[in-house]
Length: 381
Image 1 (cartoon, rainbow, N blue to C red):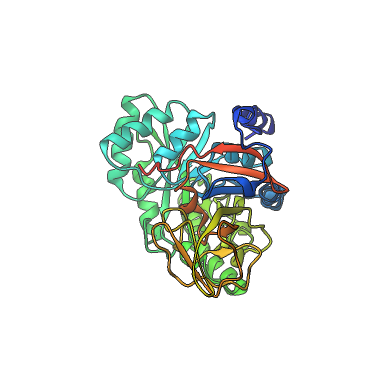
Image 2 (tube, rainbow, N blue to C red):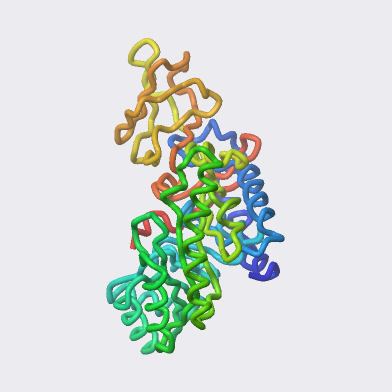
């Protein structure tokens, strides 16, 4: 996206239009009610600048994954930093983005079912919409609906490069599908999608680099096969915040779908410590039921824990056992925290954490500077 367009998109959203009506603006974050989802705005901005700067003079371009934070304001800040468009996981997320002025959106997932396909083609009348496919049944349904609506949907054929989820398992199968969809009404072949998600959590960075490059190399080989067969491939899209500097620099990869770098979490910080943990949950100690034991006022309904237990900022020595109830975190061997003491919980998974909240409170130097809606939280369809 042109920088002038990104600036236009961001207009009036650096500061929320409701900021002057929110009594929390200007208060110390420790005074806020708990649990509250927080974002260190300066740290997040540095993350955005670091990732965008990495790709500024490289062939591949940044198409951040909206599913990380689901927040329109933060997505617009990513665009202003240099992204060329947005990626999302669900059709509902894409609708939120288009409703808020985004005009180039990739749905990195298959869209299936008459109701969803109708929503998809109507969205494609308003913006450039790309979607992943891996079967002719998906293509035919989208083609019929798009042609009837006089819309065009851009299709990226998904290649399974080892994750074992969606995607075609061989280059030959991809070639066959690309040939079949050529010339069909209402759709156009946009390229390939591939995700090395099965390797993202390899802790050793050298091993992660070697293995992820080998996996993404399968998608590049598929691209070359299609091109040798006379089928132009405009784009190969994939990669993550943990592999951006390995698979993202491969010749033949065009777009990077990194997401977590905008907020970061406990797990991704282990994988890419060059980015700062900007996301936290303000919590309070609500009970000290015994020596060395403390209970905090958030649980799995307020903190994504798929990648393990959360941590506590400023207390790296505190180890939380894997005991997260619906509304409680129990800490054993806790310091001498007092009842009511505020703490910053660092979730292990930012994406599922943000999906649990309806707003994110932005702060700098411990002071609330803005409150951003999380417009796509709960958008699962």
